[in-house]
Image (cartoon, rainbow, N blue to C red; front, side, top):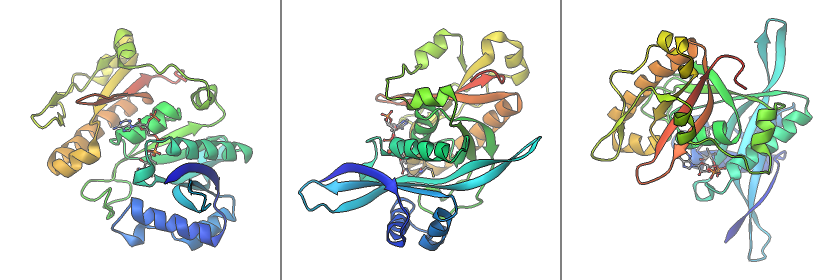
Length: 303
Ligand SMILES: CC(C)(COP(=O)(O)OP(=O)(O)OC[C@H]1O[C@@H](n2cnc3c(N)ncnc32)[C@H](O)[C@@H]1OP(=O)(O)O)[C@@H](O)C(=O)NCCC(=O)NCCS
């Protein structure tokens, strides 16, 4: 039996070989997509961070196993005053048997502490916007925000998690010194706003979906909004966009429907970003037929 253990920096070649192996398990199928240990160690020796989560054997053998890791490196972003430093977080992974225990959150929290210590105030990373679990972690739990949609960023991907669909990604911003992020990472419980709160406040689901006979959501054909109308209407400063609650399951069951979701949600979200909305929250409703919604807020003063 293995228990959740500690999180520590991975900085030896042996550690980083374990991180290589972990990638092969989480993203099976394409060895050329694995970030190799020799690159990871170079990054670690030059301001990058590779942090690992270990589980320990509770039968007293003391053996530990790497069950999750997060990897990123320093980078630059452009501002009108010239380039500024940021941390570019490239990979986060937890072994399937160790998910749902808060390890993804704990790894990102450790990364947040280390990057703040380096004097950097912004972390960015990308993820597939249709992955509800990742949205819950990145937006709801960690307090990242997003107004950047990258179409087919990596081209055709060959690994088992990504094969068969355009690799569209959100690039999220994690402003690590803000009150918003500190509140979400604080040990004190935060009252999450749920679906009912947003609806009570006048927010509308702009792509209402039907559920088919197999329990999968069907993207709405006609979107119930024009962004000009939305921004003219003060009640529409917050809008909700539904995504499938289980996109990996949908991909396996019906790749054509998954593709429809990719293209349909791309169009809606790009339109919202162009109109000045940004993703500020995410709501997941568990249940027999779970539902998931992004919360978009208009304007710059929203966080
Ligand atoms: C993304 C990943 C790292 C998360 O790791 P994890 O250890 O399971 O994460 P956590 O346990 O901290 O958080 C999972 C949360 O998702 C929630 N969740 C699970 N299924 C969900 C769903 N369908 N929709 C929304 N939220 C969901 C859980 O309830 C949990 O939330 P809580 O802590 O508030 O209860 C892991 O799933 C993974 O390795 N995925 C494959 C690789 C990947 O996608 N990496 C990220 C992009 S590079």
